[in-house]
Amino acid sequence: MSSGLGRPHPALLELAAGRQVPTVTDPARLVVSAIEHRMVGLLTQAISRGEVAVPDPWHRDLVRLHLAQRAEHRRLWGAIRHCQDRLAEVGVEPAFIKGVVSELRWYDGEGERPCADIDLLLGPDDVRRIADVVAALDPAYPWLAQVRQLVEAGHLQSVVLEVGGIDADIHVDALKLGPPSRAARELWDRCASLIESHPPVRVLDPSTALVVFLVHLNKDRFAYLREYVDVLRILALSDIDWAWVAEFARAEGIEVAVYASLHAVHEDLGLRANGLPPVPGGWRSLAWRALWGPQTRLLGHEGKLTSTRRWFWMAFLARRPIWPSIRWWVRHLFPPPAVVEMNLPDATGPYLWRLFRGRRQLARARRRLTEDLADHTPTAAG
Image (cartoon, rainbow, N blue to C red; front, side, top):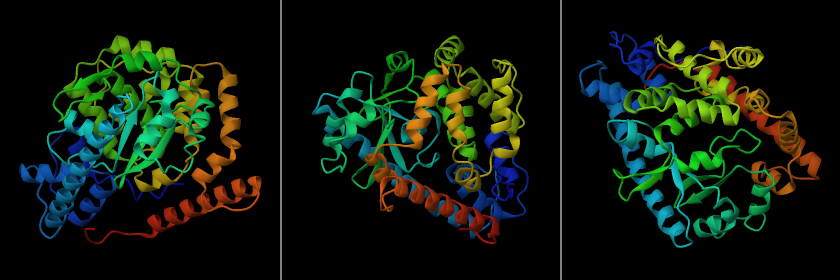
């Protein structure tokens, strides 16, 4: 059962929902909660506009963290430009999803949407060139010889590299549902250039980006409040093509996940869902509610660390043939040795022993972190 300690401070919920923030009587808890829920930038800007009053030294801590985040975002933009230049040399133009690109599109200032890495998406015609992409960005990648085979066999839907000290997550499937996307071409064809960036980068159109954010809320277990703000910002600042959303969700079989997530964001923030498409009925909707109900959402780090395998149910809740999902699940349970080495680098011994022991060690580490969080009572900023 959740301890509930990671739930966002009430003032942050009001800030995320766009309502007037009440007087803050516990600034230490507010700052700690803002850090956990990735709301430091938004809170700092609200304070500068006079919408929230937070005394020193907590205000100084927020400003310091915000300035550090802005500096980090400049590094991320440098990594994006580097990736663009290197991949242009091999004739590949990726799209950039989430991250600082989303901040530029839907937030008011640098550092408002804390980011730590960059996410690249390859077009359907470039997935077969994944080895060329990896070699261009990281020639020393240890599994370069196997990466194309692992991607084409469905064992990997993304590859994480280090580019100039920045993690770059190269996606070959934007949704990462497990079984491969059935509408990847349609998604890619709706990409466009973001001319406000320097240089311009290819991005998802707002309607497709909204679907991706909603699906990834499920993967991330609705843990952090800032991810709710992403959804609200896209809705408020973009013209959503709801006919396209319905068509794409139907093609992928994810109508329940998309619309249930959309309504969950509004429900948790006490916002009316007037005019939004309804959640489809049936057993999938009931199962989704059991897996991602209100008691599981907005738990911060605790939510991120627990129930990590809940995401696997997405493949079975999608309205798709069952056998591809079963095959994917079996492949995930027993991945090839190269994938075991990638994900469990510290495990040693025969294949099955490494798989069992490595997963057990990861589970124990997550449990210890969760217990530490439950024992922690914030008393000061930081």
